[in-house]
Image (cartoon, rainbow, N blue to C red; front, side, top):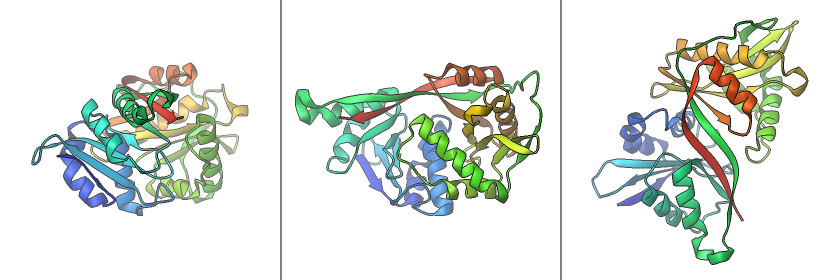
Length: 283
């Protein structure tokens, strides 16, 4: 049967729903992308309509793999067999694809298939390695920094949008984007928190609205001049608890493998690794 591609989020949710529900943690990004597009429109996360795909091994068989893309961002692959990743590379042939991201094994299979027609000159480069963590028992910091967490309000949107842009730039997460609409959505759904100290916000963290029993914490950001004071740990603990209180049975987050400070922090808070991801760019 192979891949079926669509921009219809309702079709994607209907056809891929059982696959997503079978492992909501490993499908956290497709789940939250689909929910955001359903709630806020096809261009809520990009400059063009969001794209979706689902794969069946045989006609009439169950969906076993999914992918999502919110252009100009690269395609993101859910966990999938290597054959599905290779077939997706062929299905997307002729479209503009500058890179791909997702679980290590399918990304590698996709990249090898995508660059194969170029022969020895075809190349791909790993640009980022990240790890998906899931919260076990939350362990708040033993000593909280000065201040307290609070839910962000509309007055925080300009600062939150600027911090989201700074976070994306530092992490190398694609082209520069105005995050005002993102910050407004986070405030409207009650998922954005700031740590306030001395009467001003000094750090922020957000969680996605629970869908499929899971919620993902992102982004977590403290301006460079305010780091090392415990603000990130305190606000991450607060937003993790808020995600649980909002109904998430699984609270997840991604951490940059190259950043031992953040990965160590999340482990101390009770997060445990469940999958490795990578981003690649095509030469």
